Amino acid sequence: MDMKQKAKSVGVEVAKRLFLPTYAFRKNVQSIKAAKQQHDENIVYIKDLIARARQQKARAEQQHDGGTVRDLGFEEMMRSRSIGAPSIAELERRFRFQKRLAIGTGAAFLLMAVYAISRGNVLGIFTLVAGLPVMFMASLDAQFRLWQVRNRRLSRAEHGGLSDFMKEPGWFVSVLDPELGKHQKGEQA
Image 1 (cartoon, rainbow, N blue to C red):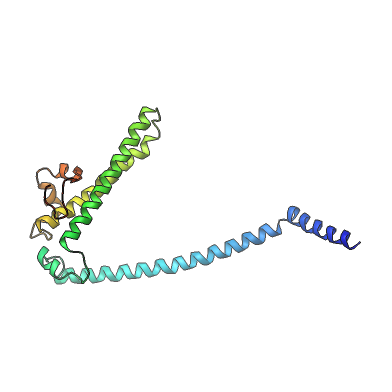
Image 2 (image 1 turned 120 degrees about the vertical axis):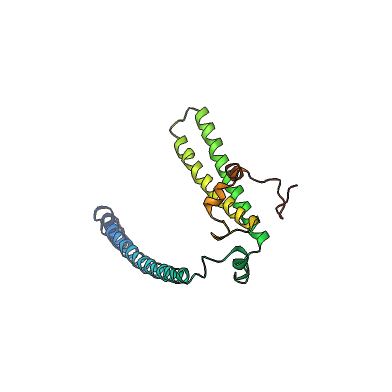
């Protein structure tokens, strides 16, 4: 009899879980509570980020009004950088790596798009082709920073802006050049 009652109680428990969705409801309620708690923590974190961004913006505006940051030239900025900041050679190496990574990724997207076209998958290439301008912009940013470092131009007075870079002859080709023949010191091989 004892075994019969045990089997019956197990059967009742299984039937409850199958036909009465209280277990599922309980799990859903627990999941909702956990998600709400995580959401509340995220809101606090986002508010903290917003407050810090506003403080940084206010500090930057104060410095801009005082004329301390915007008028610094390349040499002054390099002298006033923090301890542990990368050297000029390290900056060149980092920007060159970013540029090569962007060009390589763009080339991979382009090759995948050509392959998709050859296989007749015209709809699949739209995503790949949409990534090409993003990779060009990443390469443009890296090349612009390389140009600033190499020419020692940073401020408006030194003509170190993006419009000044785009006035240079051959800027478009330089954005697409991966500079594979460059040594770490930026010299031609």
